Image (cartoon, rainbow, N blue to C red; front, side, top):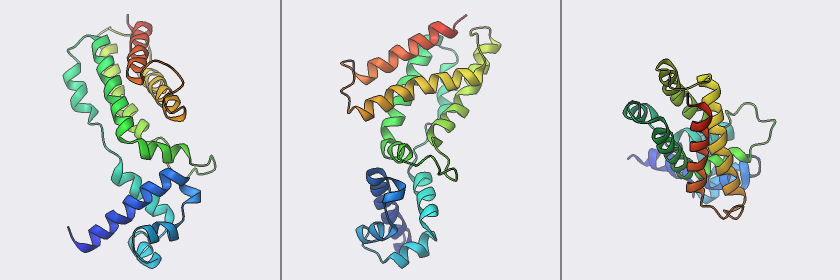
Length: 191
């Protein structure tokens, strides 16, 4: 890795930490530069401005779920078993991307220029073809896009409460709660 790439990565790593701790608005480029052991001018040479740094940091650190491969494997399985696996995988995906999710939760409502819930949008796009397939096989009732949104809302809602309450909201472990959400989803949409 070149020195330039190492510097970019160090700046983005620091930005990720400060954006997740303080939010986009409160974290400053000066703080990010100082904590990265670079001059603020160096930060601007690499990224141009704070918005670009923010967007590139999100792009760099979001861990893709590779849903397409998983769905091809799950198509032949029972609907409930598949949805429970997908729910567990989505929860793990959220946990792996916790810092990015916390950053997005802290974005003010007037920040339309940033695509909020990027992780969820990607997941939704990936799971719709699975629901279309199930619908074409006569296995489910429901509009695939609404099904995807409902499923994501359910899991993401549970994860959000888990994060905000520091896992003190319910005595039920988040993993069990997510599995229950998946089973209820299946019982509602299964033909």
